[in-house]
Length: 217
Image 1 (cartoon, rainbow, N blue to C red):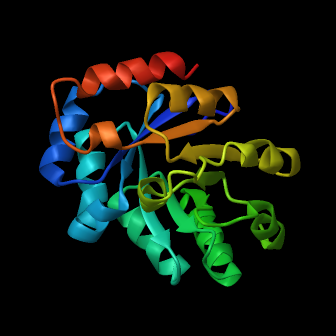
Image 2 (cartoon, rainbow, N blue to C red):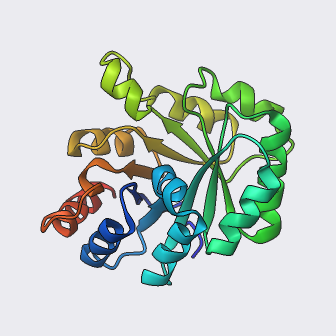
């Protein structure tokens, strides 16, 4: 599956257990606008089996491996590829050398390279140093930031700054309410990442995803 620049996507981050992921995925509507993310906690718990498990449940789906790579960029992309990922994430805080080899290796293996700019004050400064731009820039307010610093905003303001200088897709992470999802789309994000409503399976999981899809147009 190839990301369409004319399309808006909902990225569902799965961070709990494989059992919960299984139940949640089975309730989600069949839509090429839903991206499935093997979240960092899931990968740390189960390794690349987490990626492979999600891919096997929905072989046609786009699966994101949230590796949060800080070093060994080439090796970690190879692992994501072995798991069947469609895209993989490195941190913008990583050394430039790591991000460069991460992006290059993603290109070699046919994965979309994604760079998460959590805790990066000026994402453009990082992007300007790179040999090649990633496919996706993730603008991210972290979970701990949201929990312990109520004044920390979701970085919507960075969307236009990045888009004005670089031809990349932009994902927004850190907002999980309908209003926050709407704001992300209003500010022209291509991908909206959510996780809170999909941490534990419930009878409402599928319905909630459908509601999110309706506001992501």
